Amino acid sequence: MQDLSTYSLSKLRALEVQVVEELKTRHFLSVSKAREQILHIAQGAGISVKELMSGKSAPRAKSAPAGAKFRNPNDASQEWSGRGRQPNWIKAWTASGKSIDDAKI
Image (cartoon, rainbow, N blue to C red):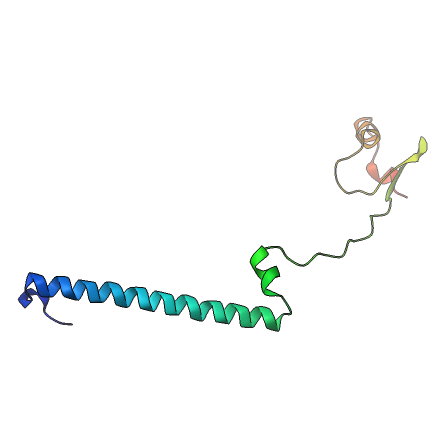
């Protein structure tokens, strides 16, 4: 490292300008290199630049709806998959002291 204490004020300011310019250049080069690497990875994964820039991922295939796992013994038309909020008939069933396992299909 250089001893900057011997530099004149004008020489230090000139050095400052050079440092700022070099920082800008290196930042630009590092961003360009990162962009090239990202695009290379995206192309290898089969993702277009448009998809990459939109920030949206490829659409997922929709899964089939979950089948019923529970049926109301008092009303066979009421079923529940076991996912999401419990329907009122399940809440009433368990509140009355009965086991949810008794409603399994």
